[in-house]
Length: 337
Image 1 (cartoon, rainbow, N blue to C red):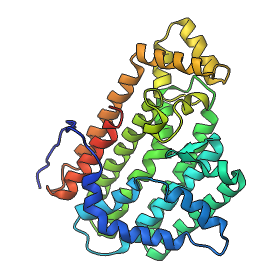
Image 2 (cartoon, rainbow, N blue to C red):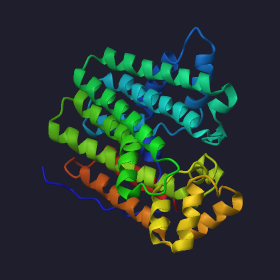
Image 3 (cartoon, rainbow, N blue to C red):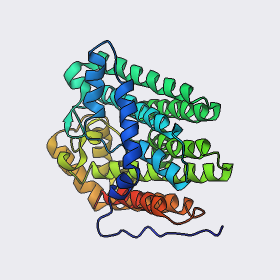
């Protein structure tokens, strides 16, 4: 099979609509699994879990599992439970992240930790992780279990890495990419790769789908980190400037600090350490990331990783599934424009 290379050329308004339409029937079955497995005799568990799971998320990660299965012409049903497992892992990490970050807003709604408190959010996150592993075990594939459990461990390592890098201005671009590669891209990669396992496809196709998901995940997070400085809560589903106030040295900050003059560097060090977190400080930070082209170059890197994701699909034949997966990359990058 000859490779087909697609270019990351932004279409007028790329969206996830093609992917949603492609996997709609499968996603209904996944949602049924999610609804069933989030139930508990303890009322707080489905109440709190449902607040986030039904809170307007795009279900992008489970959709990637379903779309990858379509790409491979898989006709079984194992991917439904595994896609639900992927969503449970993602939701559990969000519950834990919001506690660690002290976030008040998620997808435009109050966070679970703000409503029910940190202990409940952590424990329900643990419950969802357990449900995810139950679904993996029920699938019966040690390879699937290895991929998803490995991704879960990598995500946790990424979060700890990010925690130890908080309030530090000197982490550098390499460590930043390590962090987002673990805390975001690992689950994107695993979500895609497991489709090739259940479809019993060659290792080369597993690796290609892993590369697609991993590069898409990095592009997705780069854009998220950029729009923290160029968007608003209505667009982002979180408070603008959250990363800035939490002392996260994301790539826009890393680049702006490296390119700034001595006064700029004094400002960034104080801001990331938590001493300059007022609204006017955030406005100054926005001015600095713009004047140093830090946001522009962060988005340029996102486009680079997006193109790598698209290129990873080059060996697969044409069709609706491939088109939808290409457009998903374009959507991930276009969110910033």
